[in-house]
Length: 269
Figure (tube, rainbow, N blue to C red):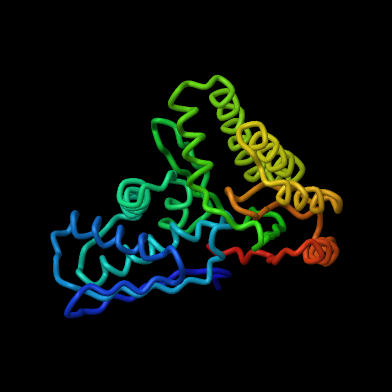
């Protein structure tokens, strides 16, 4: 079972026809088709239709899910084999190089591998698959009213990093330490330490860039019942560890009162 998914269908056509799942999606599909044709050599006209249930622009990887689904469908329709990590990198190239969106590999590598990953995003770019059965009780909440494109915020952060901003470099180093700590806590079954690392990630994010007050308000609601909270991206969504299964009804009620949609993620793997 998947809580959210994007799917795509490719058929022959007399001329190209792109059917996106909503406003702003056509640029992603056009970029995916251009990049696929560049790497495969296929030029025949086609119809590419994508549907998605992933909430858009709230930090849940909605755009990358559309691109990944499109590339998978294009590859299957033309018998082109893409290894999972190559699929992620092509998807990133679609967004960054074809569409001019500031993005990273994180969402794409998770969606391509479809698992729980620890990522070292340094020069080595290594990814460790973890056992999802080790995950404690999680929750997800998003505020549709706070939806916003992530590219603008990410573009500014990239510029600061490229310029060697010492505050950015220091915060990213600390963030990498929190990620490693969260991985170790997960493997050790230390829910308290995992929650601390999740909370710490949001506080570092607030040091790095502007964070919508509505999102920090949601984090405050979650923490009021003992849950941890971190932003899932640059939209209006948070994720964290529940203190116990029994606290979920209370947390869900308070988040709904704040205008959120909520979900207990289905763990697959």
